[in-house]
Length: 121
Image (cartoon, rainbow, N blue to C red; front, side, top):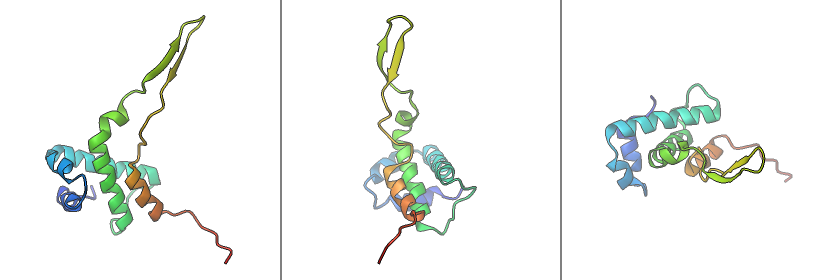
């Protein structure tokens, strides 16, 4: 694993979610960091993350706090929105309200791998 709990504790010290992070037990923090690192590696299709990149560092930590707070919501089955029984039947499900990647992590990932921009200066 790339990140330690101590590094994460330091990062979240001046974060709005500091009290939430501080309330988590060590096992949950460790699991959140491991899952977040795997999520970011999978999202970027990389085998390893550049530990020296501030954007990758922040993306993983933002993903960790997001997972710790919303893991159950992100992994719950989608809610049944409607069901019809005329003949064969039909079901429709509500869309997920949350992205699997934390919004703040996505901002850092955008900075890390910005799409090419064309300028006709």
